[in-house]
Amino acid sequence: MTPSAPGAPSAATLAFVESPVQLLNVLEWAYARPGAQPQLDGVPRQRGRRAGGADLPGPAPRPGAASPLRIVVLPPTDPMSRGQLRRVAALARDEGHEVRWQEARGSRFAPLKALAALARDVRAARTVVVGDPFSRYVQLLLTLVRAEELVVVDDGTATMEFMAQTARGERLVRWHRVGGGGLPGRIRELAYAPVSATARRRFTPAAHRGHRVEVFSSMPVTAHGGMTLRVNDFAWTRARFGPPRLTRGTDLVGTSLVETGVVDPDRYLDAVRALTLEHGATRYFAHRRESPEKLRALSRATGLEIVRPDLPLELIARRGPVGRTIVSFPSTVVHTLPYALTGTGVTVAVCDVDPAWLTGSASPRARSFLAGVTDTARDVRRLPAQAAPTA
Image (cartoon, rainbow, N blue to C red; front, side):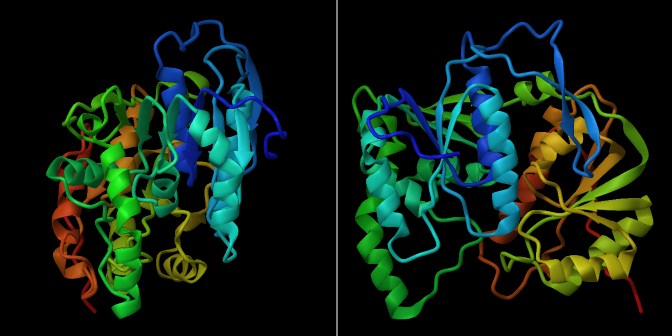
């Protein structure tokens, strides 16, 4: 994944991704474009690998199935995210897309260097696809965009908050973010305000004549202000992989709610222990942001096998093997897995987050947002919040 050669022609469609899920959803968007889907019958297969390392059948790439994209990966610094991004990027190359790995973090001047390296392509692109409208780096890139079409693909449940905030004309702030930083933080916010305001206008079709905004999402959102909404039903994932072999057990899906400061770590461990006992769970699919220390504590307390997936869970589950029941806390997967696992016989269940689990530093929006994630999930089984076990 090397930068484009100097003088290489700019791509008509340019995508920016910062996480494995965003990259997967860009592939889904490319596949779902009108005229892009190839014939699904008689697909030749190639070999891939499961999360545990075993070989399994996987579909061969079909060049020309969709117009190729130029995808720019702006990787985070944590090793798990970077590893997953490289695996999904390999799938993107198999689909015929160009992938450019552009470091934009890790040093003081990395963002500015990346901006300079990308400026020509950003200005020339006719369609720009972004995966995280809350990203300050993406918002900075949007100040250079001249494209006629801007597409937002899911970065998980954050899309729900993005749509709500743009509908209300509010500034873009992540739902779990709590203001802070004192005077220096407020100065940074004021200095960045013009960039943020420009990004909000870019996401508002009415603010730019001839400018189109599309949202490609699995989340329960409603278009507004001239936006176009298309449903991401994971057609690419379903066409390329599976159906999975089902095990008799139950799999739990981890969450980064502890790492983001929303849920108390001890309450979370108690809830996982209770779910393990009640549902006979044997495996725990860790979120890529979960800390090693937390996962070791979970393993000791529950006896669960901790699995650190090397691909987004939608792909891992579709490839299999996977439990007949998948239990998750309120998160993106309670909306995406029912699409990815349609027709497989897998039941997806969601466990509510008890308000008592929230930390004192959780944002005021945390309780209602998490409840909304659960209440709007389709084709899932709802479980009550797990009470902490008595001593």
